[in-house]
Image 1 (cartoon, each protein chain N blue to C red):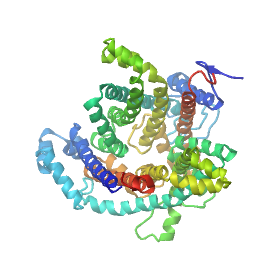
Image 2 (tube, rainbow over the protein chains, first blue to last red):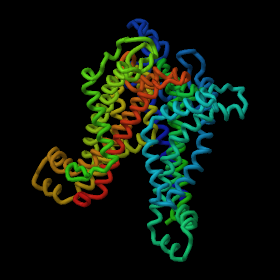
Image 3 (cartoon, rainbow over the protein chains, first blue to last red):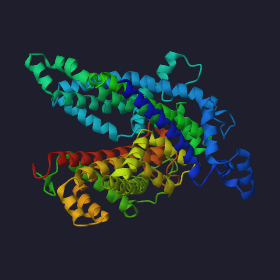
Image 4 (cartoon, each protein chain N blue to C red):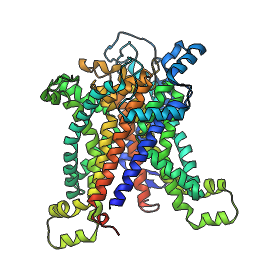
Length: 315
Length: 277
């Protein structure tokens, strides 16, 4: 098992490296470069050349990539173009906010999804099960902002239960923070829960077809016990994988939800940076998002290996 | 009453889906004829209520919301179709080449695709947009390239299965070239799952383009597009007006319609032809 885990870790490290190369290359291969992104419409051949010299763009791309990645590894992510502040300082509070929102949503969504998925598997083909199926199809089709704005319209404008803007400050207390981020959390939960639930149901039902489950039924065990004690542990690996995928979505896909609720998270920062052509900031955000995404998938892989007894023993 | 299409019974959700798609396509294609006003014409006061000449009321600048929805459909649907088509051309050609070529071509392409799939593709779209600016051509090509990776996966898997069959071997032994084998032997036998995938990819591309426009990074004003309409109208949520919900609901409705049809196509395939017909 150890070899398998190390293999996965190696692949993960390689992927992160490749992602950093792609993020860097994305700004290299394309016709526009950093200098023209800064100068925009005021660019003339002369000041463009001067700016390139000033930014060190005349040196080979490989050298600049190594420099960039070496600095990033030490926590120096460069300087933002739009306000000349160090990117790392801009990112830190935003990153904390985004993790707070994603963590809050995950804390609610994961147990809920696993519970509802198991229920759907136990009451397979019942009205509840079919309702779940329909609901899932709806949630993958409905964009996050529609869900978000519907919640705002009813829960905050009409009935005024929750605030419509999640404008948290660094000094906001924990309780206020929960209250402010409740609607964004609810939106994210509604968006991811159906998918996780459906996958839980599918992987449990997949296991339910095996002979040992039939044996358990023939022993006279109740359906609930068979599903929870016999089928669920074996269905864990795919469930963990899908949970990790959705958590990765929570971190990357929060962009839209943060925009709906004007939440000062990493996603908002990224969108602002893209519209302002703030390339160093976009690269830094991209790097962080990619790392989180890859690490979550890696964790899922490793947990999947650990949860499968057949892989624990070397063959 | 039962409706059939190519010998297959069309269940109710799929019929609703086909109807939704049909209405949207007709609305988009004939927008200049159906729409009572031009998309950028100011025809009254801002946020005027709906009446019989302005079916859904007026927007933030006093433009007719219904007309803008019709014109917006052209861009929203057209862009997504373009992206999906392009990604299928790249993905299917790549996937089939990998499956038939085997050897090092397959290894290189598949490893590359695995690597890309392990990363969040959305982020690369952002990186490209930050450098290139929000140009629709760039947007289409970028999204198509990113999407083609997923098409590649499916196309390769399908082609590997089909190319192991005898008739493909016969064609090869007959001395047919690679192009013939791809277009005449493999493609016709993988169309059904590819069409279902096309629907699915279209709905994702559609939602993604709408989301980008919503974030202000896609279609730029004054052109109407459903995503940017939601963005333009969102300030009146606090006034309890319905305007932002029309474009958002249109996005959701079309996606639901496409998904209904995709679900049916997938069900037909898993059942196999002949049965249930």
